[in-house]
Amino acid sequence: FKFDTGLKILPEHVFRGKSLIEFDFHDPDAGWPFGTGPYRISRWTDTWKFLDRREDYWGARTEFTTMPGPERIVMVPYGDENRLAMGMTRGEFDHSWTVLHSTARALVGEGVDGARTGGTLDGAYSPAGKPKAGTALSERMALMTYSFGRAPYGNIDWWPLSLWFDTRVAPFDDPAIRWAISFAIDRRRLVDIGQEGFGEATPLPYPNFRALEPYLEAVKYRLWEFPSNRYAPKETTKRLEQRGFRRDPEGYWARDGARVRIPILGHPQWADMGPVLAELLRREGFDATYDQPPDWLDRIRSGRATAWIYGHGGSIVDPHFTLTLFHSRNAIVEGASAGGAGGSYSRWTDKEFDGIVNEMEQVPVADRKMLDLFPKAMDVWLRDLPNIPLVQSFHHNVMSQVYWVGWPSILNPYANDAFWHLTWPLVLRKLKPVR
Image (cartoon, rainbow, N blue to C red; front, side, top):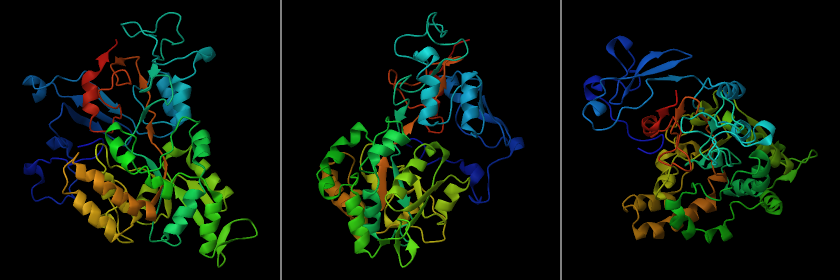
């Protein structure tokens, strides 16, 4: 597995003969669901999920591993970010979903009278976990992020964000139009305004992970011909006019009376960046909007969305996995529901690209041949630009040290702290109670 994706092993004696579509594996009387981990679901309602530690956990009994510290985990649905932030400051929650950068900074950055708070690097905690006298930490607020109380208030994720399109819908089926839109985006302002200056633009759909550096360096020179991060309104104008678009009386690009409408969908975690992206596009003549409907992801998967912000659940040590997201086998036909980590949503296809990816699938990780094939694949990808790279993704998760210490951080990077990732059990085993 990797992060929040992977192959799940299922108990054959339960699933044999069952329809994976109809069988929900939920029957409290039968003890379902169950797994091989140290927790069991003891209660599950619309508003709460309780996971209780199994005191008979085989891993601890056989000394294969240790028993995690928390006896009960209570999951509360994410709703209003203001309520979440208030609950963190009151000590009601131990860990948050990823919040807006501004919210994370407000919680752990500048504290009382401008002093640094929340898990600072200068030893604001006593060994018992109680705030030291003279620090700006209250008795009930001891908050931190992966980078403590300093920017970027979290950690870089494996999920770089792009502006995606359904590439079978005109005019977004035309690479020239996608490039025209890319040239219209001022990513410096997107970062400065939408991410308060603490974000990072990305020219490629890859996270800035050290293991990927040799591959990213191998295609760096291609960005001279395909400058996927360049802000160049003149290039936007040239490409649109070549395709017969002209400005209408209100300044929007149109052809045959139809404007280039870009209705962008997104998740609430992009509520800071999404409106800025739409405004930047409007200033360059695109009729762009940003919205966060509750069914935004279902619209994308079912082909009812035109444009959206989304990431790439792909590569972390070699470039192949991100490329597979764009293989034509993932280009689900219009009207069908697309699964996977996002590549299938764009419905882009290219036979030359498929052939290179197919060849890469036969190459072992770290083999020299991967460095030869990757630039060829990216030449096709950058030429067509099936989506528009925007920024690196960051987790702005807030953790409380009121009751628990041992959270992962830049000083103790044994894992990332995302509770929805499959590495979360590593965190649970590291946590130690304060009181």
